[in-house]
Image 1: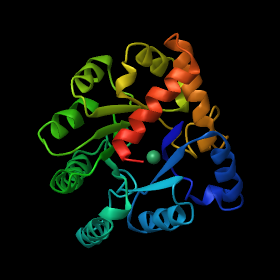
Image 2 (image 1 turned 90 degrees about the vertical axis):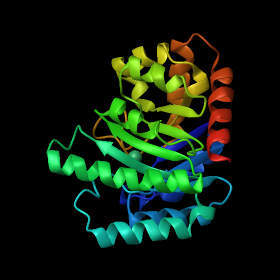
Image 3 (image 1 turned 135 degrees about the vertical axis):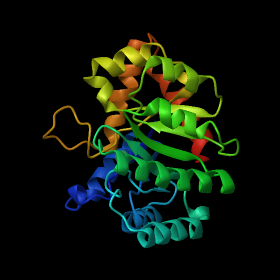
Length: 253
Ligand SMILES: [Zn+2]
C-alpha cells in the first residue's frame, strides 16, 4: 500500500515523526510527502533524503496557502522546483480551490499560478499532483489541453461522477481516494462507480482523520484500502495490488 499524499513534514509531527514513519514502514510500501511552497518543499526534500526508498517528495505550491504570494516568491519556488526535478516524483500539490476562495480576482490568480506549474509539468514531462476543490470540471478542462504531462492525479477527488467518467477516459489520469472514505457517504458512493485502474490511495495527513480533533497518519491508508475493498466487493489484497501498482506506475517508485 502506498500513501500517495500526506504532509508528515508539518509541525504536528515534530514530537514523534520517527514513530509515525516507523508505523508506516511496518505496513506500507511507500509514502509520498507533498510540499506546499518554497520552504516546505525544501523541508520535504530533507525529510525524504533521510528515508530514501520509502518516503518520496513532490514539490508544490498550495493554491490556498500561496494565494497571497508575490511574483518573486512564485519565481523562486519555480526555480527551486526546476533545479530539483531529478529529486522529486511529481509536481504538487498545485491547483485551484474554489471552496475556500470565493473572491473572483483571487480565483483568477490561482488559475494563473496553476497554469504556470502545468506548463512546467508539460515541458519537463513530470507527473502533476493536483489539489482541486469545487472546480474539478474546470481543472480537468485545463489539463486536457496539455498532451505532454505523463500523469495527472486529482488528489482527494471530490467532484461529480460525470467528471470522474471523463477522467477515466484518459489512461494516464488518476483520482486519489483518502481515509475520508471511512466516513464520507459522497466518497463511498463515488468509489462504487469508479474503475480501480484510475484509483490511488492517500491520507492527506494530518488532515481527514475520523474526527476533526484527531491527527491522521500515513499507516491509516490501510483503512481506505479496506473500505474500497468492502464497497467494490473485492478482497483487500486485490485492491492493494491494483492501487499500489497504479502508484508505482505514476510516480516511478
Ligand atoms: Zn495536501
